[in-house]
Amino acid sequence: MAEKFEVIIIGGGPGGYVAAIRAAQLGLKTACIDMYVGKDGKASPGGTCLNVGCIPSKALLDSSKHFHHLQHDFGAHGISVSDAGIDVATMIARKDGVVKKLTGGVSQLLKGNKVTFFHGKGQLKSGRQVEITPADGSAAVQLQADHVILAAGSVPIQIPNVEFDGEFIVDNVGALEFESVPETLGVIGAGVIGLELGSVWNRLGSKVTLLEALPDFLAMADRDVARQAAREFKKQKLDIRLGTLVKGAEVKKGKVEVIVEDGKGESRQAFDRLLVSVGRKPYTEGLLAADSGVRLNDRGQIEVNEQSKTTAPGVWAIGDCVRGPMLAHKASEEGIAVAELIAGKPAHIHFDTVPWVVYTDPEIAWVGKTEQELEAAGVDYRSGSFPFAANGRALAGGQGSGLVKMLADAESDEILGVHIFGANASELISECVVAMEFQGSSEDLARIVHAHPTLSEAVHEAALHLDGRAIHRGN
Ligand code: FAD
Ligand code: AMP
Image (tube, rainbow, N blue to C red; front, side, top):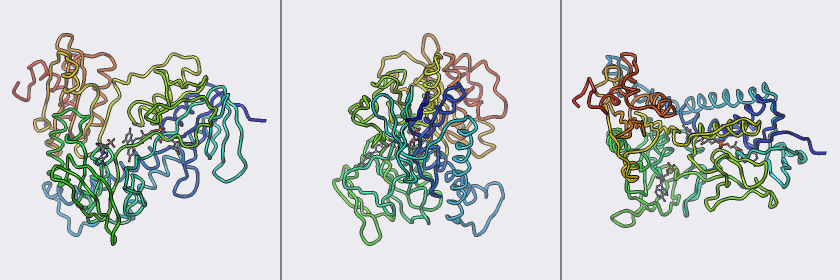
């Protein structure tokens, strides 16, 4: 007979494993099924984020940042180093160690919370039956649930005529595993993943060219931030070609030849390696039996309402496989909200206050609306900004690039968006998220005491500037 659970979660990424822990905390008998196989051939819960996404990319970004600082920035501090070198194998092994520690930590957390973990592929059938095909090849396991949460995540989008081969033409997985620094690296798509992984190899000495179909750089970011970031990345020798559509690629004599179309027509360019980072799509292969009752929309996402309920009773879906931004923290918060709804508690997520971060150097982070979105919506707003070049702590740390820009409603002064390009933007944005979550005004932030000297004073000054009373810049 099928073992019975109150909640079964299919997928153990930041959506699924967090939902599992919260459901178990709430006293629900919970199972989590994840099929990911780690580099050691064993279960490795944590999904894309921990295995081949957020965490390993940040590990390599940090390693490459140290190498870059050593070569380019230490001299200004009077520190001289000769024969700086990078051992790529050690760097990758360190990254693998970080991943192992964290995925092992997730296993422990699941165990500690009494979540039953299954390593294998789960499929939802009618009436909330779930069939598991175990990763070890043993016989299929049948489970039955009161509630099922689908958290199957996403996979990279492939473009026509550009076939991944895992060696020359790679996705994020391959770009986190290069055995040596490619002399030249082509990156298709100058989005978040392309910029982050392009930055890693650029800092290690690769000549990186980003081929971006759209005419505007980082079109989803605020235009002032995007403009400053483009200028800064150019200085870092990231060659970003806008309005350049990749139409195909072929491997020839150990090089990848890429066919591009831009304003000048069609041409070919050769690279040692090619990273395809043109976005991700929901992963639902084999997830749903024909009679599951769960509907997908025309974008291949699992259709859900505002509470993450699918079209099948008692079946919920969260994270990258549903609508909304493909971000780990969004997936986790949805997981928590669904577990609480299942347990009969009230829960909701404010999608308007989900922060975005691009971990370049400097970092880009924002929350809320961009200036162009407010203009398009006809909102009457006021804007304030502050450059890090006028922030003492930033200058002391050699981090004087970028700005904080704040947008607030012209009448009520409620903060509508904050956009940061600068050191530690990923951390600075939290204060702004909190302020927006509490429907705070720019005046609230302007009156809050910020420690000196800190980068957060730039947020404070942007709030003051919005009202024409910044202290350390002209108004
Ligand atoms: P996933 O993390 O994809 O997890 C889904 C899991 O379900 C996987 O383990 C998968 O194997 C498993 N699964 C799928 N189908 C089944 C099945 N039928 N049965 C059993 N198991 C199944 N986001 C951020 O917020 N910050 C970042 O810095 C960031 N950096 C990124 C860098 C890179 C290079 C990439 C690729 C992504 C990055 N992301 C980042 C995005 C982030 O990884 C995703 O938004 C997040 O992982 C989504 O979580 P999820 O739980 O929905 O899905
Ligand atoms: P993101 O979704 O943030 O990972 O960004 C992916 C980027 O890839 C977007 O900016 C797309 O415009 C870009 N892109 C998609 N297809 C192509 C293509 N064929 N050639 C060049 N860029 C592309």
